[in-house]
Amino acid sequence: MNQPKPVFLVSKAMVVEPDGPAGYYNPELHLNTVSKEDQTPLVLSGVSAPTHSKTRQHPGDDDPDPGQDKCY
Amino acid sequence: MIITNRHDLASDYLIHGLRESNIPFVRFNTDQYPETVLIDIELNKSGFGYTLTLGDQSIHSSAIASVYFRQPVVPTFREDATEVECLFAETELLETMRSLWRVIPEELWLNHPKRLWVAANKVEQLMTAQKIGFRIPDTLISCSPERIQDFFAKQNGKVVAKAVKHGFMRSGDEVLLAGTQILPQKKKEKKEEERKKRKEEGSQRRVSKNTKKGSHLD
Image (cartoon, rainbow over all chains, first blue to last red; front, side, top):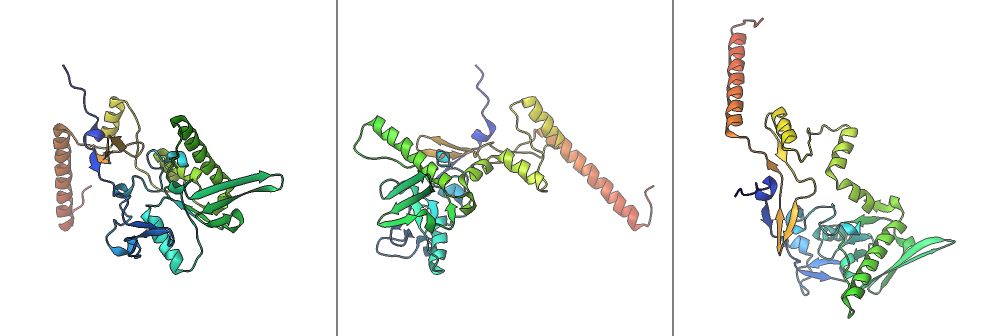
């Protein structure tokens, strides 16, 4: 029996490990800090993923994310 | 006003900059709606407006001078209610949120959600780019193997394949990305291209040799 031909792009697909929420969302500063105690903004701490990799952080950029396009 | 979600670090950068410049702002994390964020929209004969309650802070629409929209998420409803009630509530919350976007004047947005939504389409992007003077790559979107093969030959085998949407797929807990790929050439086509390239390089070498001697090719 013939195997169905694989979809080219799907056969090359890679698993993406989205970075999970990191740090602590500080409701007073309105941004994520290293921890509840350490109020250094996460983006300045060097421990967070830089936002240039939107693919790894959250799929898409300002595009609607998969499943989130209903927000638009 | 920054409309985003709690975990968006790009919004954190922006907020850090706003704080440093002493520019007042509010951050509306849609994942906190309706837990700690409330939306009131009012429409009557004298006009329309909205009030946002963010924790213990209350902001009227008249205080909002600009709006940045970055990756909001769909609100969820986690109250003690039946499944149907939760579904109904989530649909209502989402539509209320989308209604809020419509109450905010379009000129205040960077960028209006409807514009972002339209711009998320690759064909729309290519057409707009071409219209305003950019060079765009020859593009074919097709399900027909014959048409794709013709296109491939016409482009001398120099073709990349992309998903028409974004290429993200969820499979259980995994997220897969079908990213852009160079379409591989078949061995026969590759050999033919290499032969052509060698031939071209050979004739170029002959041209430069003849030019050095001061000869003309006519």
